[in-house]
Length: 102
Image (cartoon, rainbow, N blue to C red; front, top):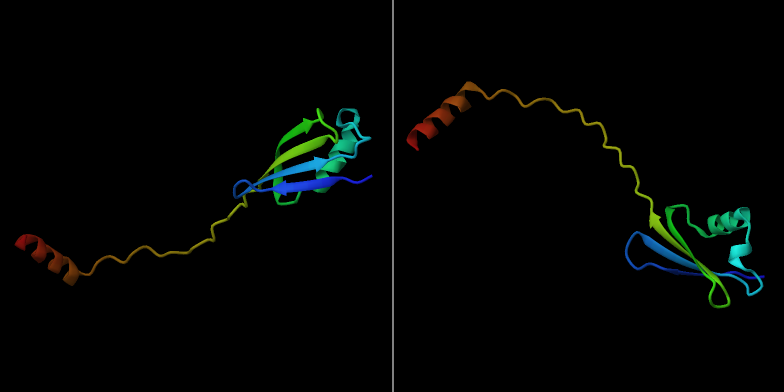
């Protein structure tokens, strides 16, 4: 009994897997545990399940999984920043002179 898994990536971060079941297996008669173990065995760890679709009109039946890449939580590093220094008097006077000329 062999399962055939085909993968396609229509866009970055999106994965569509087609799991082709053996002819003697009807996906609608699978128990929930069987379906869950099959799906979890095929799914990469970096993806979350978005949608499950069953195509059983043709033999062999297929289970189509649409998966999305998990967004990594990016923690901003703690940056210690000192407040800007108060401008010196020379600079302040220079700025005042420049403004008067304008």
